[in-house]
Amino acid sequence: MLRMLLVLAAWLTAAVSAQAQNFYEGKTITIITSTGAGGGYDVTARLLSRHMPRYIPGNPTMIVQNMPGGGNVIATNYLYAVAPKDGTVIATLHNAMPLHQVLDGNGVRYDVSKFNWLGSTGSENEVLFTWHTSGVKTFEEAQKKEVILGGTGAGSGIVIIPLAMNSLLGTKFKIVMGYKSSEDLNLAIQRGEVEARAFSMASVKGQRSEWVTEKKINFIAQAGSHRAHEIPDVPLLTELAKNDEQRDILKLISSPPGLGRPFAAPPDIPADRLAMLRKAFQDTLRDKAFLEEAEKLKIEIDPVSAEEITQIIRDVVNVSPAVVAKAKELMGENK
Image (spheres, rainbow, N blue to C red):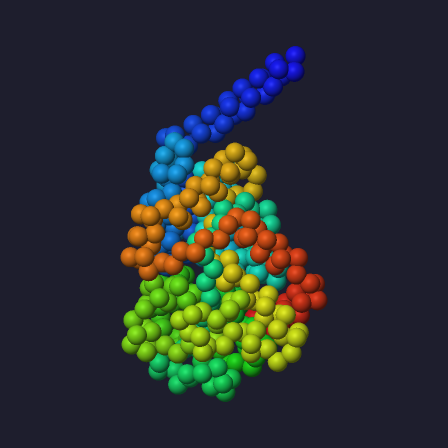
């Protein structure tokens, strides 16, 4: 009898596995990106879409759908509440979304702790820089002179970081929001509409490396767990803190860069499909052809596992209420 039960259990397991393996045959997987076309998240998603299907049983088609707006909140809400939960939709979500949730940001209809994280292409520091014509070249000068800084929406790191700097560190950024995409902001700074912005270091190198080589920008500060090797003399936000309270708040504000460009599936997708997607994602990030194309596109790949991303998310969501309250108070003063 026991042998029969074991055989039956093995047969059922094999049948379920075969069903999962066959699910993606003839299917299309959509990668939602919360930014417009041409930005770092978009380019990374499209790169992944060209290689990841090889590692998914059934070799499905994979396409990218841009869903910008609301400071990346629209796409995040979509993945949480609207997207099919059958494994046919995944997304690369802006790394500021967990922080935006913790700070009770505008428009939040999602819970980052319930997403099924696949991993990340690698952590990346967020940098804040001024245009060469702004008259501000250093952090100290940014404390003395008003600089017009562009942003998308309140939920994005490119707005949260300068708001925190204004509140805690005394900078005088005048923040103009409403730009639809990162590329729109890049054009705006070249046209002289704004004089500064926050951007990931990886995006600076991948999309606007000439700004560095031609000395068109001045790095003011950076957010991350450690200084980026390309700009070792530029201070971290936490290093600019004047006391422990400021340091704790700025550490919270600096948490998004540790997530890099994370990818997630909606809540409640079948466990077997989630396991396949996670494995396929990590296998793709080690694929030779993928890495060669990433290098040509100037996209740095330093894989972060689903477990590591989940832990970072957990730490942000469970941060001290006192730190959250102070951060919310300070951010509210600048809205």
